[in-house]
Image 1: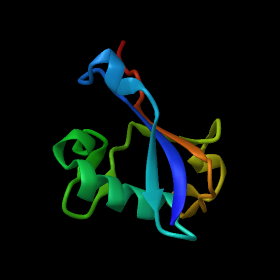
Image 2: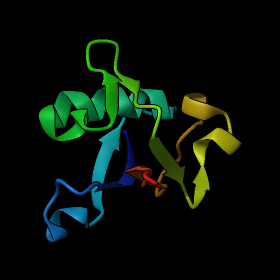
Image 3: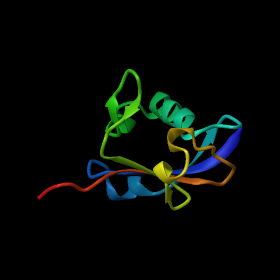
Image 4: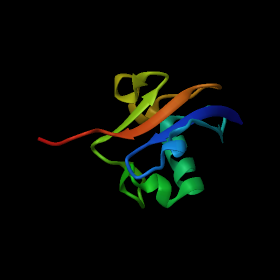
Length: 96
């Protein structure tokens, strides 16, 4: 198992729920694997980041940052995770 740090940020959470927490993921895990595992573990709390809950597809305005870099700039949801990585999930601020 690989221990990573996860931070879930969105307006529906209380301030203290924005703190990072450790999460055990499988060895050689990718962001895609982590999405599946977080959904299994946290259910509705994690679903705010998903467009399709059954297929576990991220919302268009969901941003996933791995060690300070948007996963899109890496390999998207195929970005490999390593021990100690910090993965932040957030929803982009939109409006006019």
